[in-house]
Length: 86
Image (cartoon, rainbow, N blue to C red):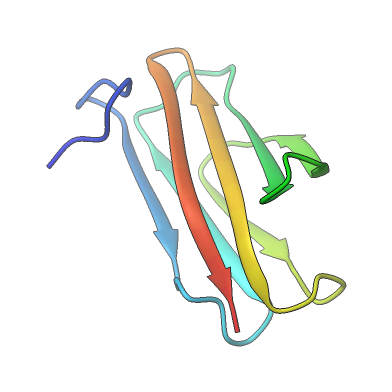
């Protein structure tokens, strides 16, 4: 099932969820040159941002266990996912 606001031509894989080993992988296939990610806590505080292409790993070792929001913005749209860190 496609995510709302994201073109089905763009494939975004986010794993593992829940995050167990402090590493969150974000893989973009077919996304344009202007792709970015934003990791926020549940209160909307931005914890990190960055430009991404292909395969990316977010190190979450400095963040406590809990719920986070990951936004992936591409030329084709915006994907928002809830991420749980154990």
